[in-house]
Image 1 (cartoon, rainbow, N blue to C red):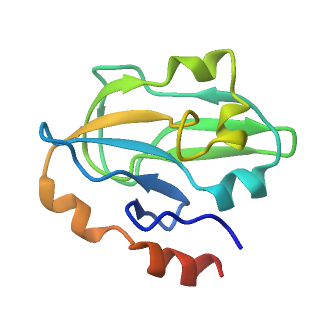
Image 2: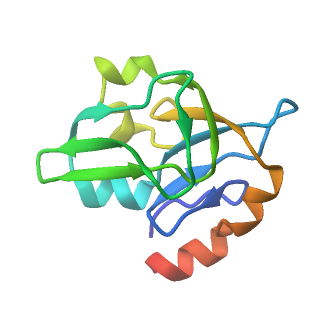
Length: 128
């Protein structure tokens, strides 16, 4: 069974989203299920800070030894940071998808956007 932390929200495209912090910023990554399906990640193309993103639009990609997968913005807003460690250590996505393998952070354009995401149990039903 995949590791699906209860405190996170999820998308049908296998991204996880943290709860917003006091400034309305969320952290985004790919789920344990997704990294397992991808295989060994060799490259991650991430959006740059300052980029405006729209929910459900492609904002980057993750390349593995098996395939290339698009990364979608789970919410609309502005990229406030990207995980620069992935430029040299993309394997962190495999070894720690919910920790050091995070992808980017977004300042939410609309706090209500979180309501359209999947809960851990809903995501588990989708992948289970």
